[in-house]
Length: 164
Image 1 (cartoon, rainbow, N blue to C red):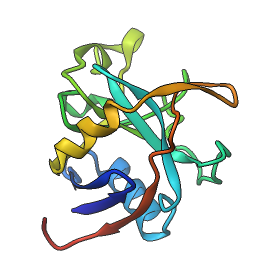
Image 2: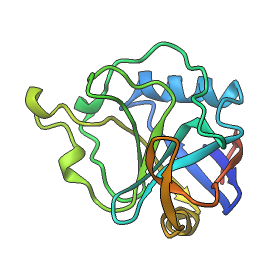
Image 3: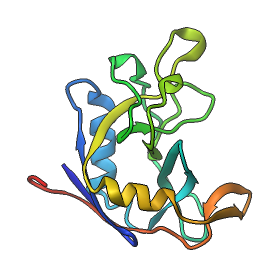
């Protein structure tokens, strides 16, 4: 379990290392390194996702490790409250950025080579009200990015916890 302390409240995430071992281990390495501390949720789209894990408050990209293998074929679905790895059009380009599904997003699931999908690797087990509060913040365009909160939603810390 990982507790995220944000400027809008806390939420707790459970990872799925059995179904997404590479992604879970990658995520825990970023947690243990303190990588998420000081990052922001830089993409907030109500009725879709909130995304974070890679940019600081001034919209600078944090240094990341090498990209990981996409585990979207693990059978997990992009349902409300699940966490998935963000990536570029390159299927195996995920590093530290992740998103929380605000609704069931079946079109993000693996559907074959032509629509590889996004790897689900965890879920919010406490604090979904905080996720929903983040989804309601006013957004705009900032430093070349759309859907950025006007008032930054900052991750103060992300740490392993024994249980919620």
